[in-house]
Image (cartoon, rainbow, N blue to C red):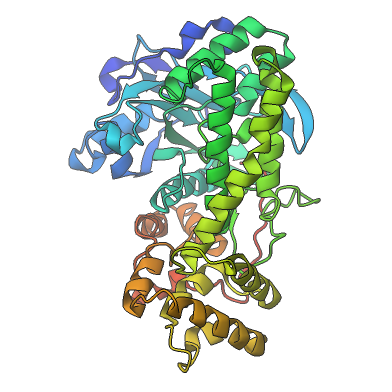
Length: 510
């Protein structure tokens, strides 16, 4: 099946962005026309992301789905806004990989958002399509993405947003019958991603490795203007401002990941967002049974990117960013001080998040011990991370009350240890002088009931591969309200995976 001839057709477009990244200079990108998809079909979209860009819901006009499918598959774009792909380098699994770049992503431009308050305070957002064919940075790849991985990325982007975790957004998913070879023959798809900036640590590593301080300085100036316009300190070099702000944001991001049990799976420096947002949803997963060494990525045999190690990998990656910025910094010690502050910022943020998950108010000297004992109890039982925290809200402060049965069921082999911990926990709650109902409501706004578990995603993907997007739409609806209780007919979506559910078996292949 041949690809359609790509074309610049203003009349076919629903979005008319502008392109400013090219002002940095040709060494930063390649102008690359997407290859588009044959007979593209709009499969699913985020109405909220559409509103962010000021776009009408494609369900409101029978002509819009075809126009969305054309533009957001790379088959059409405004004549005055040629798509481009950016160059970057990076470390992969701790090893320098050299030049990488957008091997299957095309930046189709920037858009002034309809409401900056809805855009995390950023007035300009970039629009990127992923899977629209080869670029000069594709290396041995075909530039395509498949329906399987595109569904995973689309849903994760919106799910993380509604969990309150900084993330790129997903506008829509367009699919085709175009065959694509991965481990088996699959079909092609394109996801449209949105972010104030898609700058990665690897963009800076690239120009440092090339010995191009002038280009590096231009990139820093661009990043400060786009990502951190209000972060400058008097007399502070711009590169140090950038490193400081990225370190702070990354520390808070990792604390949020750990709190919801999210495992990214492939935290290479080229997958790290300068904004401190979640970027690139490949072999990700959420904890089911609590295993600190869990990783969903089957290619990560040494568990470099497991849940437990994610914060320290983030700090390692920040050190790589700091090294890249050294030509623009006053001295190496200043950079080391900034990156060295990651641990304290992360530790404080994680403690605050975990304390909130337990419903603790204020701060007491014994709180870290109480939290650590809870984590050890979860690990000993391999209890479900999401449900253990969610059901904890049902436990009152009354020391004579029984432990809720729903919690006892999650700890069948550690009942004695659970009872001992509950004695300390209830004593701590009693000192807060807060009504149980008020605390439970507060905890339920912190602890989600629904997360994107692997078995749910796999079922939705299998249905979608047979032309049925109903399960994908159901997961999107649940992901939009992860803290809400669900009706009885949807309880299976918030239960642990069945005993016979296949274990997550994911790779970087997408």
